[in-house]
Structure formats: structure tokens, C-alpha cells
Image (cartoon, rainbow, N blue to C red; front, side, top):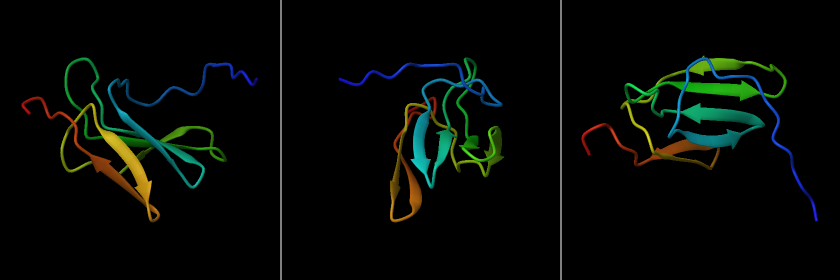
Length: 85
């Protein structure tokens, strides 16, 4: 049996919950979410070789509670809540 241990990592530039997360080309992406006051359209990436979060181009729509997957070398964001529907 293999056990993993959570350890503190590098904090994102923006606080966020209810975000979408995916990995593409050994890079972790934090997409959208909620900062406690508003929905977010921001995207951050953490590359293993860089070691800190970098901002990426934003989503077209602010949203939280979304899904993010990689298909054919492209990150696809699906669904989510924009504060109204």
C-alpha cells in the first residue's frame, strides 16, 4: 500500500476556491474559481521547472465550480457557475 503526504506548496498569486485544476505538459493549471467575493476568470500555471505561479490569458467568462480537462493537447473548460446560472 502506498501513502502520499500533503505538504505545503507555492501559494497561487490569487486566493481561490471552487476552481478547475488540470495538468498539461508537466504544468499545473489553476483555472477560474471564487475568491470569497467574486467569480474569477483568471488562469495561473505552475511549471515544475519554474517553481512559481505565472498568470496566463484569462477565460472569456468569470466562473467557479467548473471542470477542466486536456484533450488532444488542448485544455478544455466546461460548465461552471457565473453567479447567475
